[in-house]
Amino acid sequence: DVQLVESGGGLVQPGGSLRLSCAASGFTFDSYAMTWVRQAPGKGLEWVSAVSGSRSITYYAGSVKGRFTISRDNSNNTLFLQMNNLRVEDTAIYYCAKNMYDIAVVTEDYMDVWGKGTTVIVS
Amino acid sequence: IQMTQSPSSLSASVGDRVTITCRASQTISAYLNWYQHKAGEAPKVLIYLASTLQNGVPSRFSGSGFGTEFTLTITNVQPDDFATYYCQQSLTTPRTFGQGTKVEV
Image 1: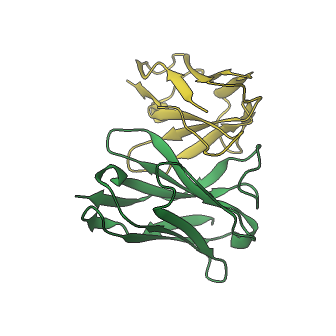
Image 2: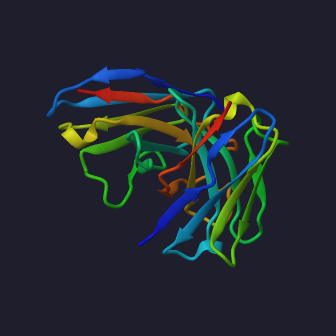
Image 3: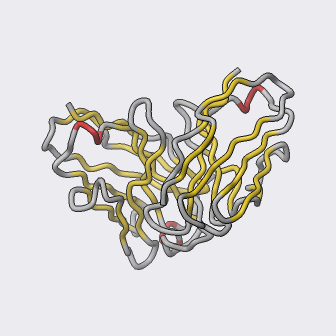
């Protein structure tokens, strides 16, 4: 069964750091791009970052560029999001999601599998 | 690219037909996806490429549109359909979402 399980969320002070992880199973991990999406309290979904499958080419939303780093360990089927210099407005549930293609910027792409999220509170 | 959904929320009864609109700030061809999200659960893709139904999604969901205006229609709304729906463009990064439409009883 295809599954994504996020971990690493928690309470952190402004300016602090957290590293989120997403454990993947049930599919050939390095064949697919992966994405982080977040949802702040009372708000909608916000695309945060994506990374290609085999070449680890990365993409970021402007709101996190320079502060967050997406990476992946294909040998351990794990996706990461290193979050530095956290701000109150980064408070959200963070979801990881599997893309449909290896390259993260294929125009026909969508996210077909999602985790249940991990909560980050910056306060 | 800015994505704008309307309405932000709507009330419906079981059996109703519901239509949600999504507008893009520039043309995105058919690179538009629809997701369903329930609180505490993982989001779920319903439709990709504007009108293609994801495997396993009930046929009461349908999507249409091209360019800048798109619609998601739910015919014969079922109890399991009460949720928030998001459109998302996949033409460029960042892959922006609409602000969501909450479908309530």
